[in-house]
Image (cartoon, rainbow, N blue to C red; front, side, top):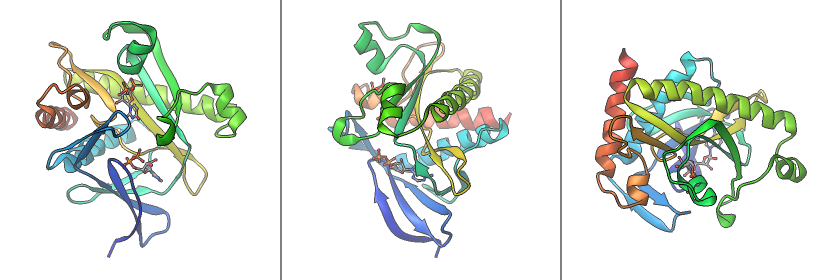
Length: 239
Ligand code: ADP
Ligand code: UDP
């Protein structure tokens, strides 16, 4: 049996040990949460959908020489990944003003930034993942400056690959969140998931939101939008 004991259950995934000490099994859940889990929902099949969407994205990143933890997708909502020690930062990349940045700077959503922006947030649910400066990160010992430069470069490259992939299927990549970890060889690789739960995607023609904002803002058609993102990606990545 591949799947062994449960190591961790988070808001969106369960992490299991496997027979191989270097690998973890990641099981995507059907639950949806927002506003640091104050708002909760779910739909049947959401875990499997996000697992399939993440898989197509990791495959595209592989073709573009981005190092990541994904090894193999198993049936349904499970994937095998390289075990890493997660750097406790949420690395957010933004192309267009939206969400917390729009609120913080008093701007309307939809304005394209002069250049893509990479921001770091400290991964701590109890503190609601606060924004942290490079100096704060170094002073707290979470990462050194060279690591931060590396993360910015990798996040920027991932952004270029994903932005152009989504443009081809009629979607604007507004922003997204990533996490990075160190594997057994101490290489820094992209970890966690990339799905509509952790990115903003707007239809290029209509500006319709196709991501978790539909749940956050009670816009309806959450499941349909995730399905559509998957179907467009599936067609797009077959070409
Ligand atoms: P949260 O912890 O925010 O509720 P999830 O439910 O998505 O989020 O839980 C997944 C957990 O697994 C996260 O804490 C994430 O940092 C961690 N994780 C993701 N990929 C890896 C990996 N390759 N190695 C170790 N931990 C990982
Ligand atoms: N994001 C995420 N997890 C978080 C915080 C943000 O996946 O804990 C994603 C979010 O979906 C969006 C991007 O990161 O695509 C930027 O989020 P923002 O800072 O605007 O915060 P939000 O308004 O989503 O709370």
